[in-house]
Length: 114
Length: 113
Image (tube, rainbow over all chains, first blue to last red; front, side, top):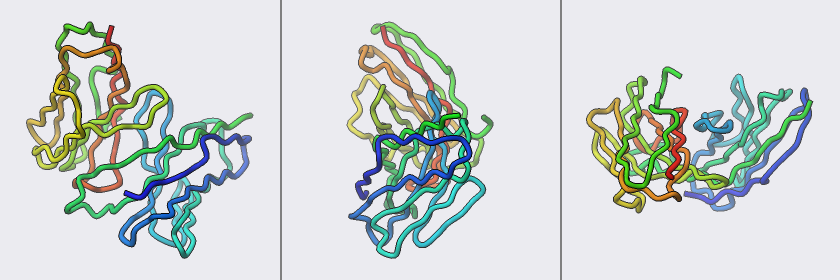
């Protein structure tokens, strides 16, 4: 699985848009980019997944440039409840020979202030 | 939390005790996972089960013994643990093994005295 690099921490204020960028220079052709959110003492929660260009759901948007060597998770108008750790993962999601080994890095701790 | 449930939510045990963690998924998934999350460390994958068959053992000490009696249930049997085994133990499931969208339970906070 490709290694990812993301900032250790970020601060924001309520109502702002937050963009968290993840670098994955060694991403493979079959790899997808997945983001998870984790609150303290809880399990991670899947947020969004994408392969290229832009993906949007009710929670976030994911921007992936043409070279796919990085990706940006965008959280619109954050609230205090968005304070959490955000993980960027890269891997082939199609199963078959893959044993499902998600590799979580340190993640980005987002602190939303009032 | 009707997707993946874990019991107990908190557990304190001595080093000579034997205890078990239970995980149940109500999503009809075929793959289940155990992860360990120690303080200020990334999540570490411990075991992967696919259709009740263990397909990954990530160099976990034998004092941790998983069991998957059916595709909905996963256990982690604990015996003679060490204080450094204190951590949050998370169970997850996915539609099939290898799928990046894994659904996690709330975890069991384990303290070994």
